[in-house]
Image 1: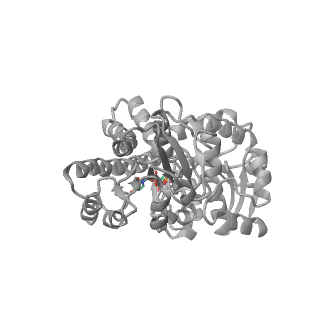
Image 2: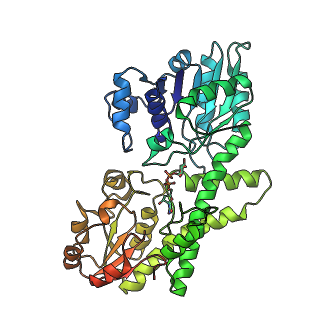
Image 3: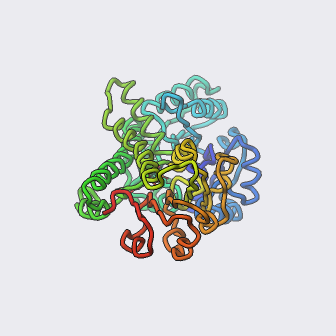
Length: 432
Ligand code: UDX
């Protein structure tokens, strides 16, 4: 089928390349001409495992095309995906300016039936607004169209895997025609398809992410009880997660969640419920616990270092999670800012996010080429992101390099007994 995807961010580019790989003709449109120029040369704007190869392969076989002109995309495709950014406003609400602008552009370009699909995460009722804009701005009043919602559930670092093997596909439609088109589009994935109305589909996305974020805050809250009681959160999570009604996923206690989705979607869902007249206190608590988790980690550091100003602290991991270079809402940002306020000297290392981190931290921290240089003359080593390469460091060497052998394991990736045997003061999150 012929598809146009507007917006080549994490969602748009991964979805476009995957649709092309499934055999569809895809044209990805972005108004960032520089980004499109680089993409045409096979240079990725984001670090996402497997994406470069997928894009190059489908550029080569001609199924994936790139452009900057919405008109061109709308002319060539019956299905138009809106995958533009919906950033948070000051009050946490999603900013839908780009969605409105793109909807207007699509309307002006339509000369025959088009199915306009919301792929970006949008608040409930956005579908109605998109329909209104299309109806108002389409040049030929007789041109038929449908609007649908098709939220994505792609995790950064496993976007292609999550697209090709989804737990479920959610489509919110108003017409049989729209339903038939989207069921046909996704049939190659053989995944369960939830067909519902547009509003329910929009809420499924926010409810899913908010539940996952709440699940993480729940286990983080329990980790604080384990800290105080002398129990072990990893054991507790194992015992809890074996209940198939709970499930073991997203029960890893640590520094808390970051990224471009959970913080934003949690805030947006809270605003949506406020605006609808329901106070979603549970989500406010999930947000509060998440922020406090970072403060608790800083307290663990300062509790073990006495006077901070004369101390050097090593931060291992800057991206918000492993296998991505994404620094959006990364816990490392707040943690480093809190430690700097206490006067600490900060040395950092991350396998992929250094470039993006340099733009953020500038000269406020010392960027080191590897974990060992980062550990040199350090009073405390803090694991903030659980990159695999931190799991088997040469700790004998690390211990010699450090001024004091103190490890704060913000993601519980080490075995407390092993680290203590190696002579480290080991502090985990809710570890015995
Ligand atoms: C999330 C959702 O999973 C995905 O469905 C949605 O489309 C986009 O947002 P993403 O943010 O890319 O994906 O990463 P994810 O793997 O979900 O992790 C989100 C955050 O939660 C990360 O900061 C991670 O460190 C944290 N996390 C995750 C935990 O702290 N504990 C866990 O057990 C799992």
